[in-house]
Length: 248
Picture (cartoon, rainbow, N blue to C red):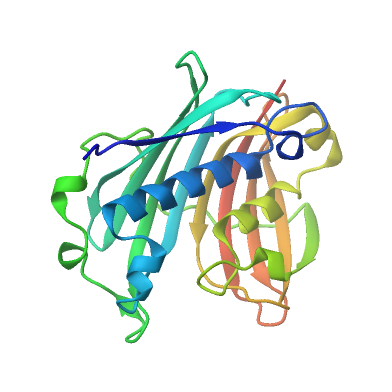
C-alpha cells in the first residue's frame, strides 16, 4: 500500500476566474477530494467512520500557493497522513504541474470526533501508525492565530443548502471562500491569495446568517488581512483566518 496517494485533475472552465487561473475554491476542492479518496483506501473515510459513530472535524488549515494552474492544465494532488499532535491527526498535501513543478503545498489538523459523546476519540484506537509518512509539505506547529481587531470591511452571507457537507454543517472550504470575498475590490482584481491560514472555531448550519469581516494588516503589492467569520444572531466566532496576497 502506497502511503502517499496521488490523484490527477484537469482544470475546467467552471473552475477558473476571470483571468483564466484556477479559483482558490477549486484548489481546496481538489485537496478535499483527494484526501477523501485516500481516507477511503485506508478505511477511515467519513462513510467508514459514521458507521462507528465517529467523524472527522477539521481544526486547522494552512495552504501556500506558489502558482495558480491555468485553464486546461493537468495537475496532480498528493496527500498523506503526516503525524499526530496529541488529539490531532495531521494530513499534508502537494499540488504539482504536469512537469512535476510545485504549485501549492498545504497542511491540516483534524480531530476524530465521537458523535455520541460529543468528545474527541482516541487516535491510537482508530488511526494506525503504519500509514503515517514522516514528512511535512508545509511545516506548521499551528500556533494560535490572532483575532481580528477593527474590521475595514464586512459582508453578510446566508448559509445555503449547497454549503452543507456530510456532517450537516457548513463545509470547511465555504468559510474560506467567504473570507476571500472581503478584501477591497482593488485587491480582488489584481491579486490572488498566496498564503491562507485557518482556525475553525464553531459551526454554522443551513439558514444561518454569518458576517465575514476583514482587517488590513499589511498593504502595498503584497497586502495581508486578518479575517473573522461570526454567527450574526449569536455573535459567536466561527472561523479565524490570516491571508497574504500576491499580484500577478
